[in-house]
Length: 372
Length: 95
Image: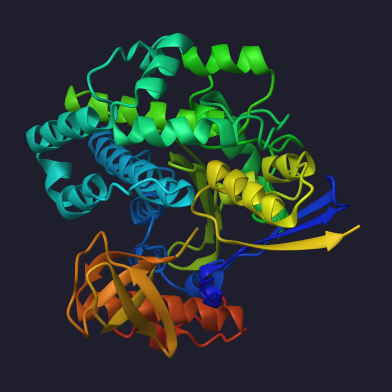
């Protein structure tokens, strides 16, 4: 087990288990906020400091900081700027999906890791952002390596049978991985919470502005109109024909659908990059008085940056990360934990690992099991 | 908001390398960056080296992470962590 470096931040999971089932579950996220680093500084300094602190999802964090600086005075970002942001976020999303599906999940189930696509994208991301032809070529090659050339109608249609056939034939390492994951993830981590939808973005930002001002804990326990949402790939893919059909059949989402949504999103993003389709960035902002807030859709869900500032200095700065929704004290992580059934503690711990990884693979957590 | 942590290679290996940051040691998977000579800085995400950093990049990211740790301890004088930026004092409220 890796020792925690304090600034990395961890989510605390505490469950009460009676040897058969989980009776109670608490989820607590107390991760570092950048306010102390930024208060008193200029917006330009915030733009320089934030990507250094959040170097992993640096594009999304940088774009949010840049967008916030742009809208500080009530100005809308121009189209070329938004297009540049959208491309950076798309490449970062692809990289994150490739990382989770090529490195993290194979390690968990003992399948060979597939580092080449991630390695190539990390090495070439600057070139790809400006060279569409090179990016398209790489995306086509990567798509073929992940999905092969079998009947892939399930990528766009509600064809569960073609998905099953693809998994059984296992023509690629990704298919082999998913064939092993499906039985382990099906039924795990169910949640009855609503999904955050693209149409919620503007209303949420409008409502969040006064909340961030008046509620010092909003960024730890966000809600929109009293409701906690699930965010991330499954929330974005809920209208995909295959996901919609599977959700209708099983009633509630589970860890398998969360991973499948990630696969569908990756396939769609590579396909659109290969075809030269412009990415669309979910982006909303609100400005009022001395405050501004920006929200954008990044790989794990909605990332929100808020700041209160005088014309040249930041007074307060807060970040609401997607993790604070998915690992909200009343969020989908808790919902899933409450449904865990296991008679063996090692099995219980394994189920928690799988469930957390499916919901948000970036999250590091500490699990405490209390024996009821 | 998982953070990347700069770590320096102490003992190299083809797939794993022993790396260190301020006395904290980790075995990092080097699959993404390949074998690296002793002294190389890498950006660590959990147990993986994600990319190779120049010493200057490593210093900037490390100081940013240190500043966050200092802020978590309640320290308020954080200007020294961003010595390459010309910073206005962050000590008091803005005028």
